[in-house]
Image (cartoon, one colour):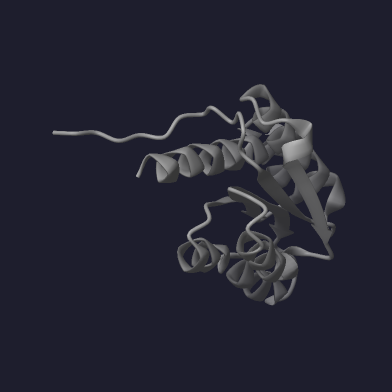
Length: 152
């Protein structure tokens, strides 16, 4: 059986980061984690593009535009949606989940680094706290998938 896998070699890859400004303290930690991880795997500073959007609701449309631009090999979408007292959480989290459609529609990998948590403390834990940094994890997934697509 022939096995094809991607690698974490980021040399020569152009990566876009799209980050939600809402819950910016959390999101900035995700951005730091993602960008550090990409640099650690060889993505050059000149090959990183960061786009800030107002909130996680806006992530899919900007991610799609960036993916369709031909200027990136992968996109990492970063945000934090924290449940509150209303059903607003469900709408925003659901719209952010549309990022999967962006990847399949455009053929450009999208790392999903959008936290959907019940509490602020859970978000902190996943943005560099006790549970690691989901931004870094999303960056690795996007990087490996971009390399795999090149192999195919």
